[in-house]
Length: 527
Image (tube, rainbow, N blue to C red):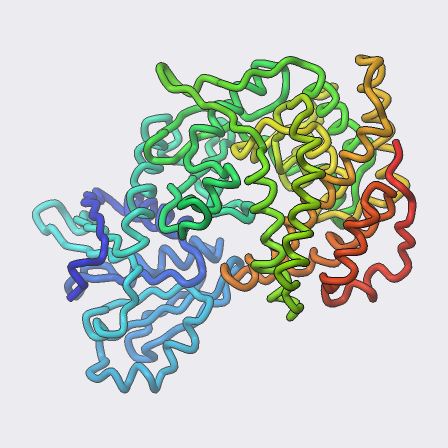
């Protein structure tokens, strides 16, 4: 029996026909991720294998895929596009030892597991799971099923959001849409593309943050770094940007409490080629977006809904420093580097406090914070700055204009050639200077490299954390590029002391010398 102390949530559904069953299978399938366990309960003939088959075929994007019942083989493994899936039938299992013999645990590593007759292995089931209990109702016909979904542990919250998404889709006319998974960012948010005959839309799901450890002053990392806790900041910023002539997604429908948004679909065309090479004219348009944004007066508060406002917080010293300290917490342990002694570490942070104090005293603008290629879509049917579709701005803060320029031109996932970086940086400076004769390119260059180092330092820590803590090793391949951007910034004379500290205390990523040994990267950052 499940532990009574484990959080749980239930959702009772009536499936009137085969189409309704297929839609529920799709709803669950699109929400799955590696490590998930789904148990399928119900009497003989209730449709457990049929339901599992629908989930597997959806994930395989193959409605005709052969999905035999594993009643006699006990376990069937599918290598699906997003992750492996293990389909297990325990009807014939009588002892826990049999489960060990079939190698269930080893095979389930990094996979989704669907288990029929889970009561045969109750003692081995993980606390976080979704149970799908199917029940016949003969008086309603052979295709009718009553279903009780029960989310245990972390699935309690996920089930509530799955239900919110279904309710939102039904209410907004997208109830019959085909739902397909979209690759998201490094956060806990997830995205789907919805297809109807009339067009497409994007479903964004932002689960509420919970369970983060308290750090300094009793605050979590997200609190200190001003990371969005729910969908309200996204709604406010999307409307605020659209009202000022920028291309943020139109909001079709929202469940603010459930954390689900239905958004305009900007398509899949980006600022890079299929080989991830930057397309300079598109990056130039993105620079023009920043010029336009940084030249207008922007409010600190934005409306979300009637009587609900979102206040943009300042990118303050604590936020900058807690991001920088990810270097100590994650990157140095990942690289096996020796932690600096207390005096050296304090000197490092003191130097940062002094540098940042100057920046924090200057005029502030909206800092979208992740203004780089994964979050910028190319909209060829629009002109000017509206050709750039803006995404992922829910963590926006009030801070230095140089931050988003550095985010774009030191793209964490794209190699921006040194000469191209300088051309685009000069374009930004020229655009600002035309509109503001007091704009000082040399002063901005110093702020630009400082923000570049701060952001690169943060990303080194975040990508190492994604690998070590979150089981997402594919981010590690970007570390040599981030280190290369650091070296470019360190060529600026204003960062001489900081460069010396990094060279003495921070090892480069594995493979950096092989990847970038031919890049001189010694041009100072002067627009």
